[in-house]
Image (cartoon, rainbow, N blue to C red; front, side, top):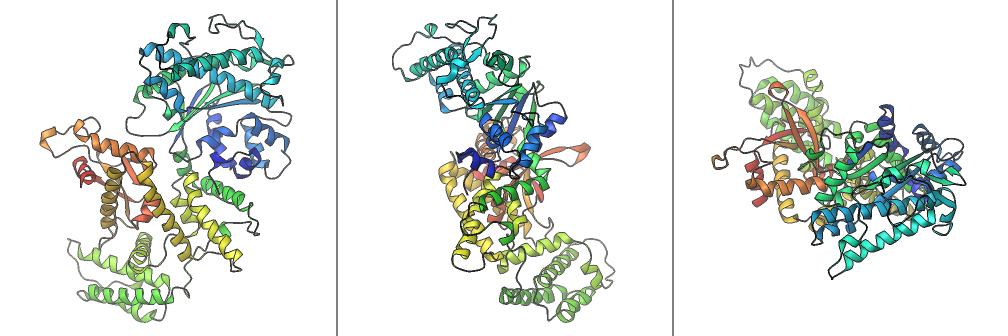
Length: 617
């Protein structure tokens, strides 16, 4: 199992592609926001942005169209047909995908005035969009690139004199030569150690390629090559701050009918306030998956089945080989020890109040022979309820409580009981496909990082002649092994790894202490925090943590955590007059690391100066 973006073969890509992600675009189309508009697609790394864009490239669209009768492609074809990019006769859309590589940002490092930098940036972007368009046209029409470009005509009426050093209309080969020469000129600027005459280089003030390359201007055998063109700019977060701002402002303000999709990594801090209230639509992939759990689970199943189909050991499934229950016989000894220990604790905490005697009798005597996970969870629930009762301040008439009152409701305490048994008695908690989906935190690549190792475990069993299925304990061990690797990799991945890991470790310890309190007040647990805006430090006069220089270290750590998908942000309304809070939840793999629940649990308000201390201590 490997990352989708690294799979070169179109056939393999489609085999591993889940059409469920296309639903996010179908929703935009239903609201008439998809075509002729600017669309931002934002998410953390690995959520599927690039795969979503790549499916619209002509090679993949043609493959789906040509194999529309194949059951493997049927659902993908149906959804692409709904989007109007293919029909039963032909491919209707020309998707142009370019990535924002390091070359663009290098332009910012040249010691020239900002105006020249901007002109070179737009010139490089125009040249690459034109070259990419010509390549995709030949792909769509089964021509050789660039040899057959003389069969393509470009008849844009250049009334604004955008295209210098070339006469229009022209052939695709002429346009290719012009764009290639322009790109080479800019490369020479980047590579030069000598003074350059920038006025001699053809710079551009606009991204005119996105409207000059409309389908009516590009023809093959006298007919336009497609009904619509989609310009897809991937990894826009890799642009410099000035380039990104200029590009976004230009694209959102231009009023030409163009479909421009821009994908980038989402970072909440220093968000997109410069571009608010402009004419564009936004998709957040994690938010989409979060509100469409069934679709996300279906996508993961489709992807895992696609990966399993590569197996030469006859493993054609994935979910079926993941045990989703605790095998009582396997954990008889651990369960017996855990139950005996919990009964001793139950007897102690209930000895001060006779109102719980029926609970104790039921748990110790009536079902005393049962060595099951369910009994262990129920005993822990009783202990937590007794601790909660002890903390009540109101007058208590000490009425005896029935076993029915113990058995009813409070399912969150059963979940808390499972966590307690996992932490203190090593009874597995993090296992099964459902939990694996939760650990993925709505991120496809994160799912694959765990699923690939689990799949190797299934294969190992099969090769050894054993039952391929993995026990709950084996699954949890594999998951925790991958998590340990992920934690170590942060030292290499993060620019400020020492501060970030110190912060997360202090945060995780804090959340753990709240989750495993005697009363489990936040049952099943607490997994997030919101930053209490008002500081108690008088020296900084209650300044907002997002603006004060005092909190620069905190902002940097938060930015890194968001950029590298260590936090998930949810907007929560709580408090007076519908007060809104940005709640930062730990990524689910970090929840496993600190024995926390996998759902978005409770959260605490924490003052920024306390968070700042967590970075430094």
